[in-house]
Image (tube, rainbow, N blue to C red; front, side, top):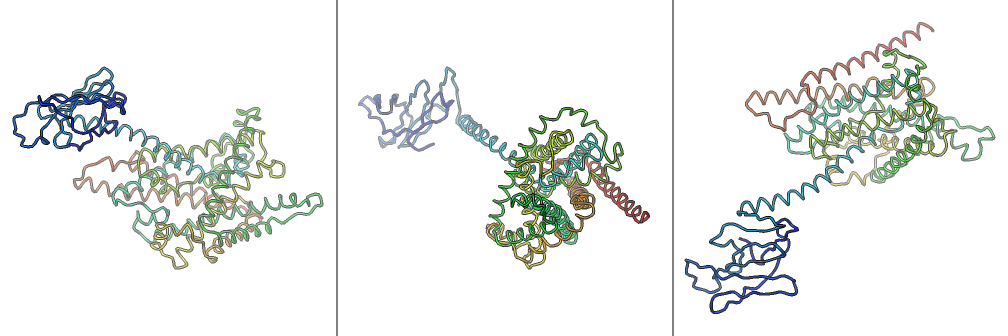
Length: 561
């Protein structure tokens, strides 16, 4: 039963209601026949059939049932009306709707199914479009978090083992990171399904909630801080080198032979960065970082496409031997792989990606797979364009597009690094516990807040000192080498294995206790414990190989001294 006014059906809508028509009860003649009523305003005709015989006594005329056949174009639907209510005819339990030459006999349940199915189809279409946009946004988030300031040093690093072996290393690191990222997504999705709430966006809080161990969480926080320090040390060192090159040219002092010390320039950059992060809100800083990412990708496209077009012999570039360890896999793993790994890390934002995609397994898998594949293709193409002779990485001779790319990459990575570190120090050292920080994020207060001066100084000071010390030795890439050789395999290799193994073991216990294996317990990474063993063994072997290489270098240098 639906209240009057009644609904109309049109062939364009496939037999579903398309409009509402208010109409008064038809006037009846003495013979009980309803007259036809024509509404010119609506350009439609409403035909009222004679009142069907009724076996029930109706004391009041207003309660007498009559049939109302509403003709709209070539379609019709039979309703009955009683006391201002549109109801099914008591002698007919079906609708008859003719549309586009096809007749449908629909029961009430069938009609509801058709209407709901049509609405579901339209909702599904809109949902699919929104789903594709969500997947694209998540994939771009992964790509933007991966491509950064370390891109410029990749060609020089790849020249050591050669372009061919370097490309194979990048592909292998992509596969390992993909397994790691999917394991973290699997843990986040299952954790959400078991608790019903959102998983923490902070990687430290996410690991703590999964492992239920505060000691492990503190270790993870310490390693994460050290990794961010290493990345920021690299960024400040590169920023000092860029400033010492650009500022004399901008001031017109390059011809006079006046130059700036890169270490002093890095200190100046650190001072500006401290003032910026210490006085501006997180929302303002995020806007600056977003603008830097936009310039980063636009300028990079302007560099890469012309550079690839001028490479004369791509096959020869891939087959050319390396300058340091050509054909030596061990040498390539110890020298190039740690830096490659540092520049391809994105796993710290996997919990946020799963939340963005509503913890959907299929969409999360697609976003992580595609979003992390873009940096692989970008890095390979960039190495080819530089080592193939189509592009130069020298800022002094690279032109304004290269300068814009380097500047944008350093600005974005430096701001993001200082924001992350200062927030971590505020939470750990300066009396802001995790619950208070979470309440600020939920209330939106974190976006308008500024970092404390103490946390910003602690975030910037150690990387500045370390960068100045490393710049005279192994160069700016030494910080990335340390982070990628030891910290990243621990955080994003061994830790996901431990988290996933603990969770899968709990799923197996539940299954043994009689719980059925529902689709919610599906693993994103197939292979069971064997796949976890492969990732754990690879991460451990990588760390041990790097440690043996570094110890050998120290022993060799001491022996030579």
